[in-house]
Length: 147
Image (cartoon, rainbow, N blue to C red):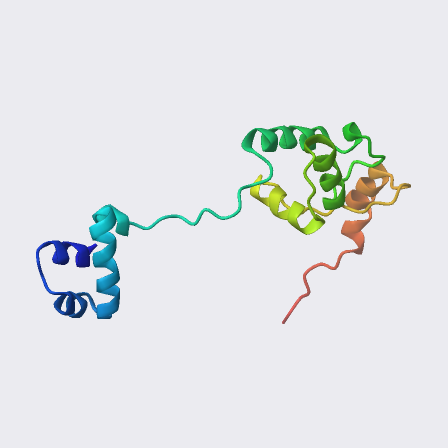
């Protein structure tokens, strides 16, 4: 933008190049853009990229589906996996994603990878808590006397 200001003030291209520390060919290119589109033509433009295959409304609906849980979508366990989410996206929206890209979509929606805690089916939480309260203090080593 500094170069554009200098060019519009009538400064020569070579002098502008020296003043802003670039090559004269860049200044010549900028001068052409200014001539065609004005100074606004030099403003940075965001790269558009490929349009998303799920629209905002569909993404909001997907979040609601995911928050209801996998069992509500017909799965036998209460655990979402990327292949399962990809199936749900295909079933509801007709959009096919790979498991890897499904992860990117989930991450963009604010979801994170979480691993379920493993616990034995036979686990008795009351017995575990009782053991921690009564037995563990007797087993645990106390501070050693250092003289």
